[in-house]
Length: 279
Image: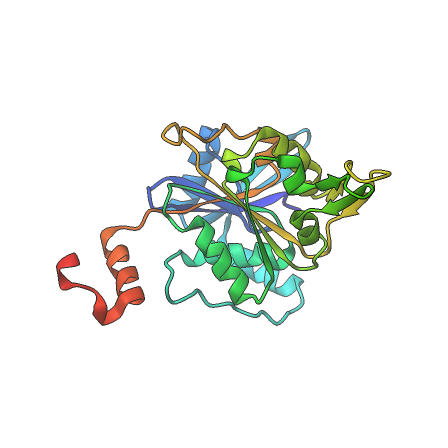
């Protein structure tokens, strides 16, 4: 039987039911699907996987044993050498989220980090790029005033007319680079409109309509777009993200550290210099 998705369920740090599709290694969103939450939770309780297949015009569901699925996958795929990138010693993030970030960068995929302020959404991208020895380009979309000049470029008229490409254009021309779109939830909607075709996996192009003849630039191979966003009513300067924009990313939610994790992180960063009274 050919499966459309094979879902592995788990509980996040807030005890919410989550799922990941083992066929694509991408999150499977069930927030608005109470029926799917029930199926996933049953699979978790019985230590099974939930397989989805086509049954006529509708989806069919089947619970399968984890061991049998992994054996089938192992036998059907040739063995490939895998290079494991260890997590940084001075940063705390779950193994699953770190591996998924590294995988997205390696495959040139788009990824969005969401979560409370101060959880390390921006820093972890720099850590991953450093670990993978990838060139990283940083763009703070929240502080961008002139969107078109920041993303496309400027036209100058002194001593003739000439066009200067933006740093963003340089970034998307750089193969295997990591482009960090920080504070995308604070960006001007015009920035979202310009980025739509760039982030679309089936297009990946940017039109330089400020330049003569409006040439189209292709995003280089292996370029990964990682964005960060603050979502919630408490972030008064943030905008509600366009659904079409969000759909161009896989999403990871960063967790707030508990007290023990905070103490561990402080110890890693400051060692013996840490004041014992901090605890």
